[in-house]
Image 1 (cartoon, one colour):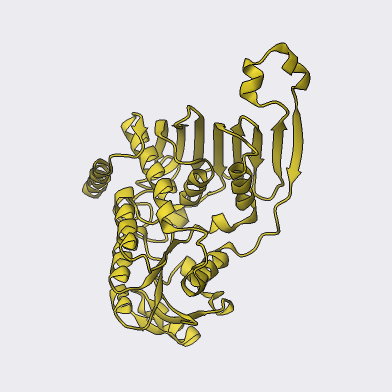
Image 2: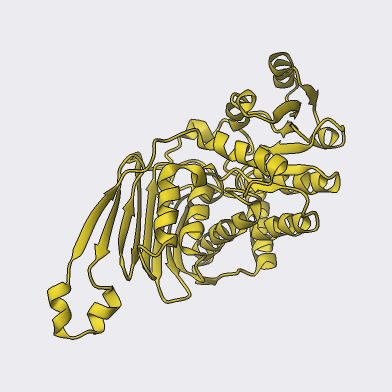
Length: 370
């Protein structure tokens, strides 16, 4: 195979952004598109000369594609993925993998039975120079054993008009949640990628429609615990207009601070914290920090990078930047935050996935009954 025939399922919103770079990726041939909006399909047919379908399953069964990019509302990601695997088709799905960790794990398990197929997720922020450098610094031991992680993400501001733009948006039945399932899958994925999945959401405050006329959460503040005793905080909303996005990772060897648009600050401890705390007074003479400023490489098109990597994984067996299997951890963490906040109790990870599914179904049923 010297090219991959790609079909897109769900052609509104971000899918339109992705299509603009398709012709710049060697080995990608855009051959088919599926969407329920026939007028949009007609435009796509004229613009890209693709075969169009009003049903995603028809596209999968058409024989026109070797791979699909799934960009539908979240609940449709699992069934289309499973159908594609049945036909021997590679899959790249938009984030999140699914609405629940249980559904996502079923996708991963199905992929494991077809190891010849590539299964990736559009976690494009893994491809940004800033977050790749954070990953490298943590993985190489610059920060040392984790003591604390804190992430404040208040750069996801959304207006009421945004939520009103689609009937499925910001509903339990249509979207499965709010900021945790729509905006923050990136941050939840990165958090687990950097420092591993927490073992417990010790507490969470979840605001349902606190600042918008919506059913689902538009503000979340969570306290996390890790296996080694380290703690963490995660704070986000779609209501602040502050553009704050600040990650702090504190370890035995130093402290890392990362914010988009700024150099990374790395404060190396001259003496590891635990050695200093438990050592004798002679270590006081060596106490101190070495401050280092790290400028990540220039930002590129991270969405394109994930798509190109997906195509090259199929054609040349390149290692995936964002294997879909790794997306379960961040999704499950978001599920746990929601459950902890609305039940006002700690939640251990891995979660009781069946119980969370029942809980989410109850939220949808009560919302529909109003």
